[in-house]
Length: 289
Image (cartoon, rainbow, N blue to C red; front, side, top):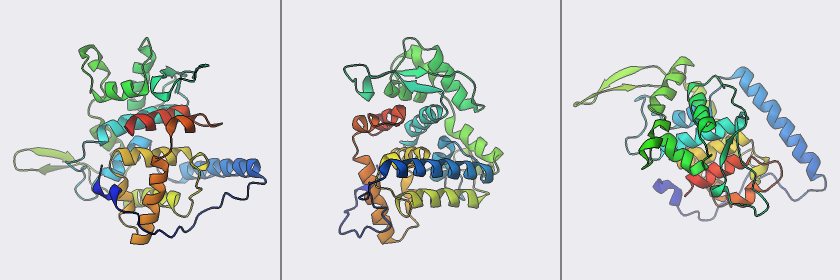
């Protein structure tokens, strides 16, 4: 984890906080918020280059001119696998098995294939096929290890998703966000993917910043699910700092304080709240260990 995440919080003046004290008509407010989220998502999809969670995390990690992620970042691999599981869940393809009467923890519940229809994304469909064919089912933590190739069981190495970063970078090239170049690093040549469309990345960064500043709700369950997942996944992949680096010192402290509030939430407790996405919290719990 980057040293930036352990900066002393000091005295922070909380600004742009949406009050939650007036809850006379809380249910109506929540419905309105969710409707606005859906409308904003539809508007976003119709006007912007639509990126998957995996592509957004990688884009935050890519150096604009150099076109590669930090050589010191060893967190992004598992983070991207977590992205794949949450993306499949948000698309209605997988879910967690029922908690049961004894209310098993997120860590002990298995991932179930809910809908095996292809998504149209090669990486997602490859992971979905593995999950569908695996019996008995496995937990979220186990799937992150399988898809990353971090397992001691040689029979499970066939589940590893290979060249994930390169494949995601090629997706960004196809969507016109990046280009492909070759760079010489003395002892070897490396394919890089410098940014060509800075607007897409800047809008992504602005959405991340706004989610914890001007649009902060002080309630994880009133946040847009994709953005909530992106914040957790970008943090676990050690690339969230890149979105907050351009902020003023004051806004940076506010943003990081609110991210820490999200990180301090108990995933099992949050997963029991009405209308939540249990698999999202299961992934967050697994990658936060």
